[in-house]
Image 1 (cartoon, rainbow, N blue to C red):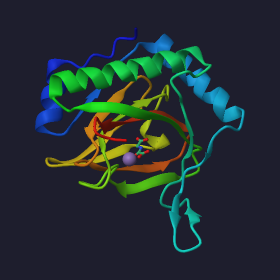
Image 2 (image 1 turned 135 degrees about the horizontal axis):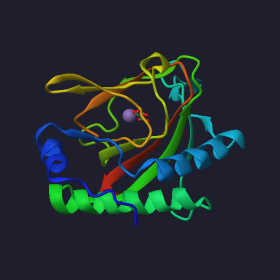
Image 3 (image 1 turned 120 degrees about the horizontal axis):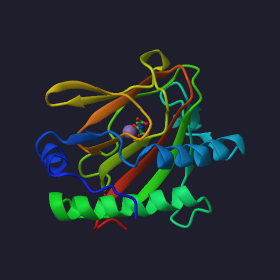
Amino acid sequence: MLPVSPRNEDIQSLGERGWFTRDRLLGEPEALALRAEALARVDAGRLRPAGIRRGADHTLDTATRGDLITWVEPGADEPAFARMHAAFTQLGEALSAEAYLGLGRFDLQLACYPGQGERYARHADAFPGQSNRRVTAIYYLNPGWEPAQGGVLRLYTGEGVVDVAPRLDSLVVFLSERIEHEVLAAHAPRLALTAWYYGRTAG
Ligand code: OGA
Ligand code: MN
């Protein structure tokens, strides 16, 4: 099993601030194996524009959200993806036990920003009372990331703005209803795996 147990200070930060980050979560070999499987899906054309549906004709607004996405299922053919799916299961169980979050199932998404300035405008992943998404966990797959490449995740926290670099093998976890966030323009390809955990009462 991959080691993704939250530390005491992570649990404390999630409770007090609504978010935490971790660097060097799995180690570089595992992170690069995940990246290789992600790139294979990208190269095979398996990702689709996420966009946001707007208006009566539901046109796809890619200016608000410019990434391409696909879903990673628990039984994924790719071995590192399958291991990571199990690791996210373990992470959700640990957060439930230690942070009393009552998490149940989750969806796992692979997202790619091609790097031509795509962004994801400020939003929340859930709205109180409307959705049962409780926790968002994002794991990044970008080796050698530098500021000029953009694609920073900007969190809007009670203590002000916090910028998270989408570096290889780093994880950010936040409360889906509480922490608004945005992805700043990406000027190089940017890959991430995102899990959204639902409350146990979700259907
Ligand atoms: C999302 C999102 C942030 C990121 O997909 O909802 O906010 O850093 N992603 O990829
Ligand atoms: Mn989001």
